[in-house]
Length: 194
Image (spheres, rainbow, N blue to C red):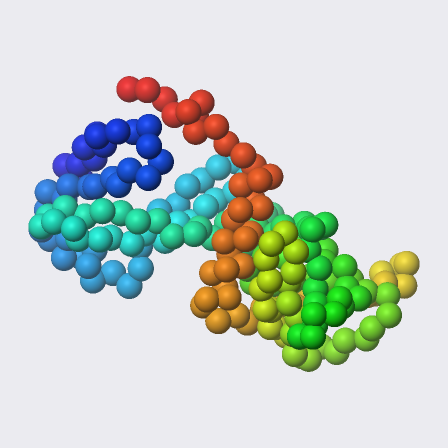
């Protein structure tokens, strides 16, 4: 066996560290050379792709640490990043803290779909705003990539977000938390005993 998962000392504490014993030095070398590692959890409607970081606390023993996952939903054309639909608690502000006249239709870590009744934006135009609400303030930057006129004379604008890594991680964490709110799980009921 390449990996051995020993029983943790106390499984009731959420902050317990968990270690994996590697019984193959070639595997350790291979894992250390990887640009990135992931663990993917597949569910009926979504996949959660967790970045995996390996800490070498002792020789031949690594401690896995998970990052905030990317969430993909199963779409007809394949997978796409999960979108938080109609986030009523969020609004867009300008850099002066004034509310922008947009309704947020949905948001993901890669894009934003907004609706307005007054403004005209242009394809290829840069978009800047601050995502605010629910105890967050996240600066967003992106490019208008698509528009669609609606029957009620409103206009929808798709924005491809171009975020630096710190802002991306902050938005990713917020979206992950909202996903967990919408799809709570009771881990104890999902785990089968041996």
